[in-house]
Every structure is written in structure tokens, then in C-alpha cells.
Length: 266
Image (tube, rainbow, N blue to C red):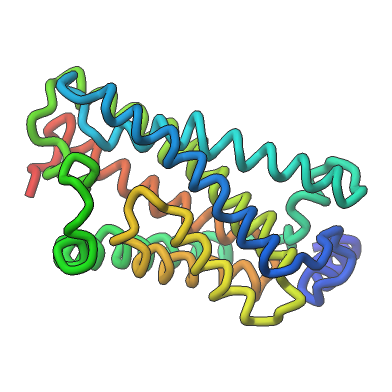
């Protein structure tokens, strides 16, 4: 590791030399929730449009993320940079980019991905039905998205392939990467003046952004808490990407196995 790399890492860990400005909590909240609102507005008509097509309802969520959340996230980032008088650059957008060694990134990232799997694909799957029935029984059944094999029931073969493709392209790729860059890469550094409290604030707002599945908020919160704590501690968005996108990739691989018959559906 050369001297310049060491200096960059030290500056990032100390929170110095970053281009992020200190934002108010209200501004952070508005910027975190707006992409989720854009996704929800697109989700409702898409859900109606897919009814009876043989394509699982979960596909509507991925399409809503693609045409609602992703464009809104990038629009807000670009607009904010101009409003703050900063030049548009990767360094200004995502200031916490401290270099991570290959083994540290690999081991920590894999651990964060597995922990996310346990929380979001494990505990959530078991507990979400109870939360829905207890607190969200007023939500029409047609708006409830079932994860896993339950969400594939009644789908045609073509419908499953459409869901599989969207899950990989949007869920893991475009959507997953954008979510992490926006929440931990862009917004978290702008709340760093709050100290460690910025991490639960970021996690809570990230959870609430998922307006189409409020029964999953506790699990989204704890997953984001892990990723945010790692990004905050090491001042590196690489860890957030490894943990969050890595978790989504593992979930997509499991889905691939079920869709193509390599793994029996539970």
C-alpha cells in the first residue's frame, strides 16, 4: 500500500477531506423517502396491469423500482449536488470510499451478506405473516407480495422467467446497487455530524422507504443497521455494496435454483 493510499484511507476514517455537507434530519428524511414514494406510485398500476398475466406480482415491485425509485434517486443526487454548489463527481457523490484490502472486504462483505440473508430472507419470512395479520390486516390481499415459492404460485413458465430476469437485473443489479449507493453512499455521509446516531437514523429511514411492504420494516432496519455500521466504521461504501448486493445475489442464486429445478422448492 503506497503513501497516497494510506493518506486517503486515514482522511476517510477521520471523516476529513470529504465533499459531503451536513444536512438537516428533515432534508435527509425527505430525500430517503421520496424514492420509495415514487416506487409506490408506479407499483400500484403495475400490480393491476400484471393481474391475470401469469407473471408473479413480485415482478410489479421490480418494475416499479426500475421506473420509479432508481430514476428518482439519481435525480435527487444530481439535483442536490447542484443545489449545494458542488461539482458532479464520484468523490462528491460518494465521499466514503476508503480503500479496503481484498481479504478484509471479502470476509467482512461475505459476513454482512450472510447476516442479511438470515435477517431478511430468514427471520422475515417466518415473522412477516404474523405482522401482516396483526398490524396490516386492512391491506387488501391483492397488494400483499409473498416472498419465496409462495409468491410464484399460479405463475406460468414464462411468468417465472420474467420474474427471474427482473430479480437479477433490477433486484440485484440496477436497483440493489442504486439503493446502496443512495442510502449508505450518498445520504449516510451527509448525516455524519450526528455521530453514531446517523447509523440507526439511516437504517430506520431506509426501512420506511419500502412503502409497498411495511410489515418488513423491522427486518429491513436491522439489515441496514449492519451495513450502515460497517460503512460508518470503515468509511467505505464498498462494504455496504458487498453486504447488501451480496445478500441479494445469494437470494437470486437460490431463486435460480428453484426456477430451473436445481433446488427443490420448500
